[in-house]
Length: 243
Image 1: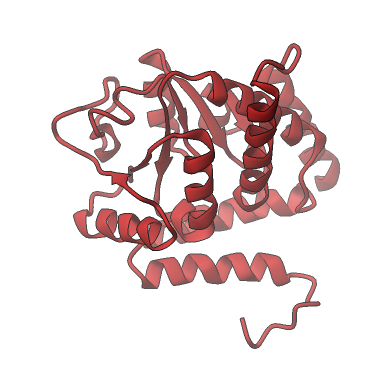
Image 2: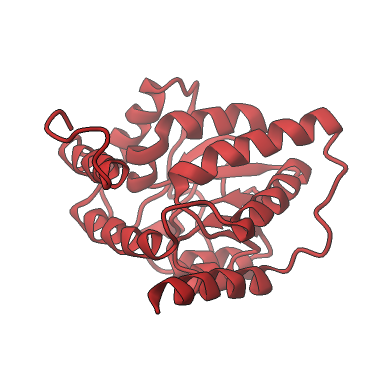
């Protein structure tokens, strides 16, 4: 980004693009991830590239749910690792939840690259997919999980998730917290709690909320959080900017 001045109006968006491209070059992100990032960038543009009240409400609800979980797990794919590896490690430490690599496009090499990326950013351990444990209700590569991680979990933080696996996890009775810039996606509408925001903005806020919950003893549940109503508020904000 040495050729882009920091006062450029698209600086932050361009910085994130560069992070995803660097992830591809490092073998962390797939080329398909470039398309997914571009789609999210379009929704973020319509959201004014800011964290809205509905996102903050979802973050508060997510912090309460995750802090109360018996065995929370953080699922990591290539795009998330490329964008927020350091904050994923912070979240893991704050929540006391393991990091687990899980990707759609089969690649042992890329799985190891994601693991190495997380370790390089301070993770002590990273769980890897295993043929010893498989999720029900799904046939893609994402069904392979660690027996002591996602398979055992009761609550999973899965930013930038695939809709089919989110549906499978919910059918298995697991709570799912996701970050998705598209409030109309299958993932958004299937998850227990959807944070409609850019993951680079949402993750530090989630960590702060969890640290606050720990100080308070985690006993202040957000009142009457309704994921579908929250998604409706996000969609309304997008439509307002669109017109």
